Image (cartoon, rainbow, N blue to C red; front, side):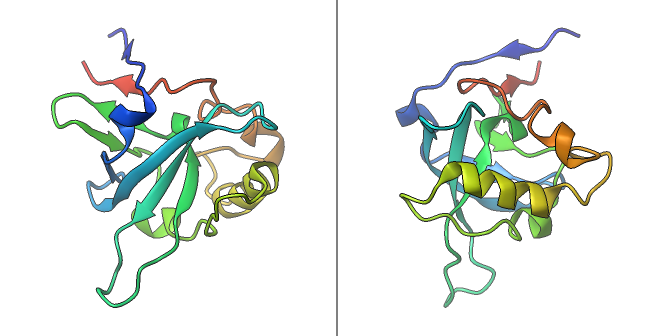
Length: 139
């Protein structure tokens, strides 16, 4: 079945809920942006849902290609990662170098063979690095 794509504006994507591969809530999208120094495409800044109400985790970044848009539920899904793994991604502070952050992502996500990329060389050429916000629509 052919996948359709949908292009979002930053205003449309902000506030969308993000779910992991098991349907657990990871957080909500704070914003989407392209880094001028990176050729890796669009990044999504995610506000994680706290595990305990008194501790708010810091925001994280993921490339938009990690997500699949579910049009029926109006949510973004991360079909290849568990919430626990996603929350191990280092915190992102506005102004941090996105290029350095990409290497931290690789360090955390590459150890899952077959899920994201089998080795570091594949990481930056894998499907999650696509230009623009282009989440797939389930059809």
